[in-house]
Image (cartoon, rainbow, N blue to C red; front, side, top):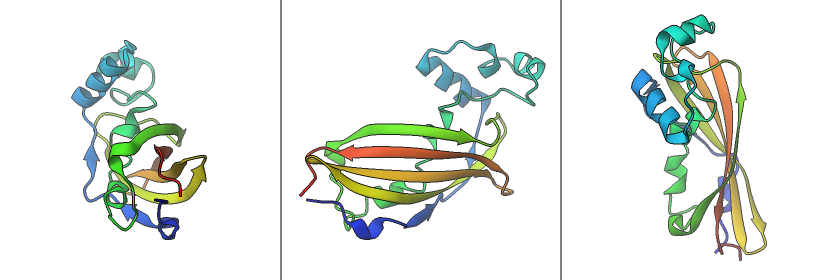
Length: 149
């Protein structure tokens, strides 16, 4: 069954700020196999010009779909979560993510389209500090295998 195109343009806000911690950054860096010391050592990060440990560039995937997850489970969208795979992601930065940041996201479904037998949905998330400072924009495309009409 095709995804509900009426969802294109809908925006969802994160329910609570995501507090970035040194521990989460270190765990993420370990999970992706990146031993860069600025991801683990506050002094190394400061020596590189950062106020604290800096997060790897793909770190916002951890929380950027927080707001959009409400849409993903909405039965009116028609998404079969069991058939979903990750399609693509990209990040546009205004500044790095640092330990101590409190971040919120606003996720908007920007596109739903068919590709062969699959449905593709793109979600753009604007990531800001709780005070409104822009941090990054993420673009995530998910694929529902076999969902096209």
